[in-house]
Image (tube, rainbow, N blue to C red; front, side, top):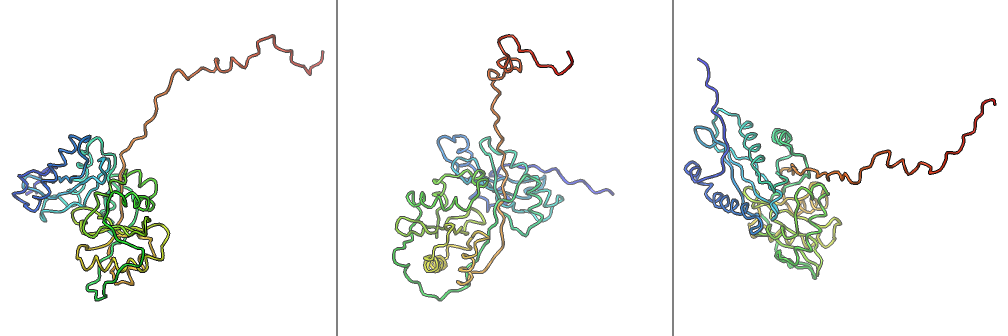
Amino acid sequence: MTAQPPQPLRVEPLNPIHLAWFPQLQTVLLGDWLARVEQRFPDLLPCRSPRCFIALDADGPLAAVVVQPINRRGSCWTLQRPQQLVRESGHGFRTVQRTLLQTVLQQGDRQVGSWVIRCPAGDADAIALLRELGFQPLRPFQVWHPPANSSAPLQPLPQGLTWQPINRRNAQRLWPIEQGGCFSHLRQITDRHWLDLLDRRGPGCGVLMAGDAVLAGCLRLGEGEDQHTLELIRDVAWDPRLDQALPQLLRRLQRQGCVAGLSTALDDAPMAELLNREGWRRGEEQLLMGRSMWRRQTAPRNLQLSRSFDQVLGRLRPQGQPMPSPSLGRR
């Protein structure tokens, strides 16, 4: 008796029918509806809402992936790692992942020019799959988890330093620091503006100010499984005032219970030393990968500027009679 081939896969946007199997996606459905409205009126509504896509066969959903724009232009979207909804299936999870991601990338709106995704640096299978889909490594990060308990007392910040919520004024001052840690190719893919920092506000987020200067900042990393992870950024040069200010800020975040982890640059040795000293535990290394679909725009050739060799060399021809050439032969 021959085994029956697996049923064909298909990918659909999230709709109310899928909630009969997975009611936990109810909150994502509202964002999916809003995202469709934003994509229909891009000049009126900035792109902010997430969308969800489901991979199914005849027996029901198999996996889901949530995508969300990372800028208000909607030119760059981030992919969350696909979630396996059903453990037993005739299809391998890698096949389901590839079909789901490939379909989502092809169904992107015309204004979507690039995609980014974070994955564990030690997950060789996930990295290999993303490379097959056209993603390239962009930047490594280190995740840190707060200590189990901290009995250190809270103290005020050093004199002259303040912790402010993110607003339009300090977001413009934080913007050069956020961009300073990204090379040009990464900035081109993400295509962000300083206004996009306002969409990364949340519990625990803020800016460490010294007068009108910004020393460091905490930004919300993303949605879904990363919604309780903050990205801690600082200027390229290490400011000695951070040695006194950051421990107090980290203790405040821990007391508030609003952060499950911190994400820092993998090569930030001074920050790693400070977090180790404060009892933060080193977690997984993450790799930010990107896929750009921008095409080089070649300007059409101007036929009026093209000339033949005869026209160009004609100006070099003497207008009078040619001069006789000397001869070395015998007369």
